[in-house]
Image (cartoon, rainbow, N blue to C red):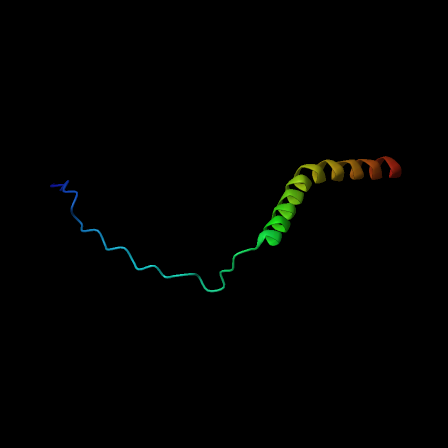
Length: 66
């Protein structure tokens, strides 16, 4: 079986033209970026704190009822 190692084959397709901005693509201003970063930071904090707090609440309820 023959395997061609010619780097020019198959020919490379020409790059497609730039489609321009996506429809509905809007840039955020500084205030919106700040709020988005705050929301992401809060979610990351809650990702770490919420399981611990949830376990504490469940443990407290079990101790109260038990």
